[in-house]
Every structure is written in structure tokens, then in C-alpha cells.
Amino acid sequence: EICKGVNGLDKVVLREVRGSSAEVYFYGGHVTSWKNDHGEELLFLSSKAIFKPPKAIRGGIPICFPQFGNHGNLEQHGYARNRFWSIDKDPPPFSTVSPNKAYIDLIFKPNEEDLKIWPHSYEFRLRVTLGPGGDLMLTSRIRNTDGKPFSFTFAYHTYLSVSDISEVRVEGLETLDYLDNLKDKERFTEQGDAITFESEVDKIYLATPTKIAVIDHEKKRTFVLRKDGLPDAVVWNPWEKKAKSIADFGDDEYKHMLCVEAAAVEKAITLKPGEEWKGRLELSAVPSSYRSGQ
Ligand code: BG6
Image (cartoon, rainbow, N blue to C red; front, side, top):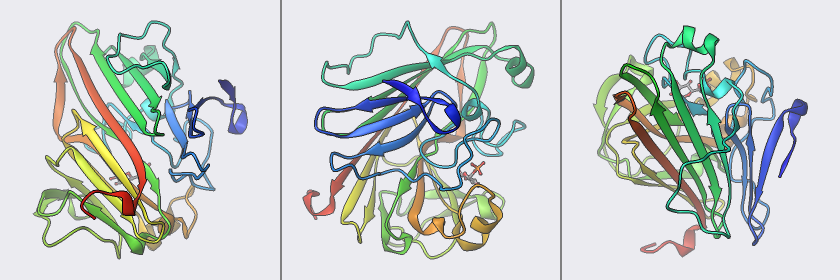
């Protein structure tokens, strides 16, 4: 179902039979909402989000491509998140499609202006799927349609909605190496147990397991992220001071969000002419008590 969203921008609403739903804006190929079958919103979207080019939407799942953050000469997080995507009328065959899944296929191809910024032609296909249990899946396929190789970095910049950041724990990243964006990207090793939050954090965990859990104690909810083709994971929360400096972010909103981003940052992905890369993110949200081994 295609309808008008904020500022008259077109969005696609996906609904699954048991009541879960998701919303995807053509602007940015950007997932802005993911609700479970009780109608509870699972993604954070800032009350100050600006739905107007060239500003990327603050919250949901912006796509960072062809550059993550400031790891290169392009604008922060690349430009895919502030371009208009289209419906892909000729999607490639996907192995995971079943009739009861709601999904949308989008495509982005650089135009002449984009090619001046980054001189490589490609087709970027994004499928967003809402599974029967309400799981949200994003699959990106990037094909080099150029005559020369190119390299890129990438992230699904997922903003999770949490009740209170002080009550949140992340499992799956402990003891890993990370680059600290707050310390000139210096490399450190995470110490101790599961990760908790009491100040600003902006870290790129390297070569992580494919499964990461974000446990919201107050909500008794666990987000499980599964990723494929994306070795790294960025964890970001601006905390109080930085939050105040971000115009499209409420002063206290840092308490209610955590970005855990499936990413490929440390080692850029290189595609030869004709080659395709695939990167997948699967998100589920389950009551914490249901988790096996808990
Ligand atoms: C994170 C980066 O992924 O995104 C941070 O690691 C950055 O350094 C944050 O501040 C938000 O970026 P932006 O461009 O959406 O404000």
C-alpha cells in the first residue's frame, strides 16, 4: 500500500496478517516504522525529524552508502539516505519469499549529478520484508554496472526504541576489538561483561558474531539482530551534550534510543565490473522471558 507520509512524501506501508506493520519512505529507501502485533513501535524516530531533502530522516533505518560516517571524502554517511528511490519493477529472484510475507522492492541508481560526486555506476536493490512473526528483514544487493572496480563502506543505521538507555544491555560484542570514533578512531579491546550505557558512545565493533542481542530490562524486551555480509557493528548514543547539538534530535531523546548498526566499515567492500554484493539484516523483538537460556 503506497500512501502519503510526512510533508507529502510517499511511503509504503507493509502489513502482516497478525497485525505487525512497517513503513518505508521512498526518500532514502528509509524504514521509519516497525510495529509489533500489539501496535507498539519498535524503532526510534525523533519528534524533530525533518522529512525534507537534503536532510536524512532522524530515526528508523537510514542506509549509509557508499560511505559510512566520515570514513572517506564523501558527505557524512554517503548520499543514498537523502535520495529518492523507486519501486523495483524487475527484482531479482529471492530465495526467501513466501506468499504470506509482506515486502517491497526498491531500487536506486545514481543520476548524472550523483556520478559527479562518486564516479561509479551501480544498481542498488533493497528488499524490505515483514515476516509472518513480525520480523523485519532488509536485504541490499549492490551490483557494479561500471567498467571499473569500486569500493564502498555501508551500514544499516538502525535506531532501536528503548524505554530507558540506562536499563539497556547489549550482548554479543563483549571482548571484541573496536574503533572509537570519539578517540580519533583509535583501536581498543572491549573489556568485561555485556555492554551497558552511562555516557556518549560511538564505537565500531570489528568482526562481530552474526547475532547481537539488545536487552531492554524495563520493557522486558529483547531485540535480536542477525546480519549477513556485514562483519562490523556500530553502537551509537549521543548522550546529553551531543544530543543538544543535533538540531533534528530532541534534548532528552537520547534516553529512548540506541543505534546498533550492522555495517561494513573497517574493510571496504570491493566489486569488480558485473559483481554483486549482498548485505542482510534481520530484526526480531521478543519478550525477554522467552529467550532461551534466560
Ligand atoms: C553514527 C556515527 O553511526 O551516526 C556517529 O558513528 C554519528 O559518528 C551518527 O554522529 C549520526 O550521524 P548523522 O549524520 O545521522 O547525524
